[in-house]
Image (cartoon, rainbow, N blue to C red):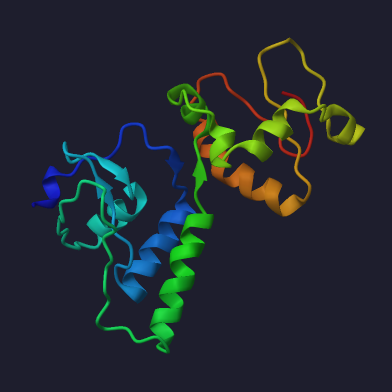
Length: 188
């Protein structure tokens, strides 16, 4: 199959920020392809949008293996042995790149009729959005509001998490006309 037939998922639930894209690209350059992508019968990507995007930028070919989902397809890297440094790096890079992307929670909630906490995906996020977080935020980090627009307040347990969230969400928030956010306090 030609790469040109493959289409990105218009409802991709993963957000691939610049750092995530950089790491996927770095992994492909230094380790080669290690994980497959999944497409549906219409050649729309089910999983692997970020990997496919970076593979395309590097000119990697795509080989399609058809399946009905009743078998697990294993990719055997014949160039790698168990003790190879490159193999160890690929194992780390594969897991690390996943850690640097995030879910588009608004799209997940909009699209899914299944109980997402049953999948273990949103239990912490739902808890943090539904508990009374106002009492946990220091007074100097809260912002008085000039009007009462709809808003979401999210509290983090450490600054590193908050900084990563701000870095990944800023480009998304800027896409919405009139949307604003406060990081670390200030007025909306």
